[in-house]
Length: 378
Image (tube, rainbow, N blue to C red):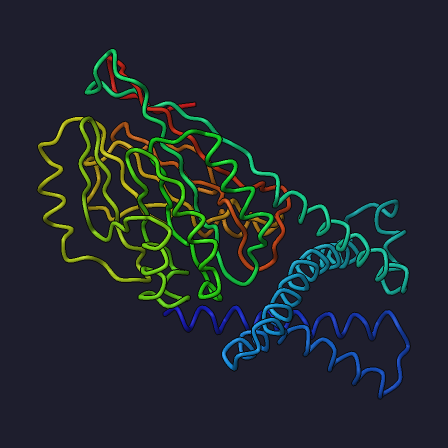
């Protein structure tokens, strides 16, 4: 099923490039050879990430990383351009819009439109590159009756979707570590997609994560990109970074517990029924870690909080609309039917284009302390 979805996405991406080629021919009166040259250029831009991956496999590390990053930068610019130009075309095709709106858009075949929209796409992506480096810290409180009244609060830091690999810049890596360390965590949690394609070159980054030693440890679950990057290698790198990966496992602490589930892409553990039996008679706060928003329905009513990621909060507007219709929960805190809560982290890194537009990266801090009743909120 995964390969079918990827194939469909690649076909749509290719057709979008053909659309751009058609638009260029509308904008400019090009001759036969110029049209062929534009087609070859767009074919190269479409293929750049795949050519970069091929170069990496053949040992051309620097060239492969450069070409992959170039292709992903293009993807960001192209997506914004395609969205804006498509919107303009839609406006010119709507007969009921007043002439004061559609009149100026009749020149939608003018070269000025092409360069204006292209420039706007580039500017948006420059801003998006800046936004992707500006991490927001979201703070939530967990009230836990099982904690002693005089117990010190427990600070749990959640990161998600860092995508260490081809597009992780060292400056962003350093900033993430600095921000996490500044929160003085008692525990660090990664809710999947910590690694991605090209993560085999991220050993130094993993060793830097190893230096963070919160007193209650570091825990992670797998995401779909751990599988894409090569699951055995991903598990080894996570271990090098100092994370204990919970794959259908339960980890008990004095007043709460973690339950970690694999992403469906990496398989479902045969320990689930055992975990469910263990949870039925437990008191205290139960926190479920699951990369994608949602959870296996057999866990309904058995946990108080589920931590997820995966959506990136849409990452690039207006892609957020598609993510919302696909997953329902884009980001933030949502109630469950039995009085618990689901929290979807917007992601700390980026996937594909190293940009974010109207969806800044996030690190989440949960402060757990004694309370008369179980409550989770801002």
